[in-house]
Length: 113
Length: 114
Image (tube, rainbow over all chains, first blue to last red; front, side):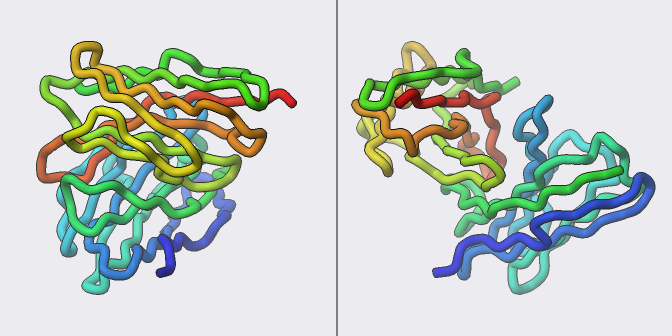
């Protein structure tokens, strides 16, 4: 069974631009969560989607948004990029929301210059 | 607010020695508990999890963890460390509510001396 696939693996963007990251969950998994990982703040929860609905959202500005499609694939978008948005963005999938473990992808490394 | 504390930012052990990584959490009830490992530039791999039942859980790669409710702890152990265990280890809690949110500790970097 294929794992969680995140594309692209690496991105370099200029401040002020926007970016879209993609995540394909494990087949059959319906919950997708996104996390931001930085050296200073560690791993922080961005949001979770389940059955195309946002179930929970972390403490991030509105520039961070996401969506989930009917096939459970998810995208997250960051608009008006700031230098501080440089991070590893990790996607995790679970069979359902709530009491199950999350399986993580390898992440997308975003560098904002 | 819920929180996870990993008191040791960096630990160095000799290959073959035993290992214990500490994790304490703050939450009003018993959360779901996880340990993940991350190699440089990679995603997170689940080592083990605790939802309920036996407080000593076995995971992959020879790791185990013990949940102690009285101490709000979920420490990770391995009897004999291998050089390939060098990585960053994260303790996480999942809240028993209808969301998939995980709260992570700051991580412990493990260095293994030959």
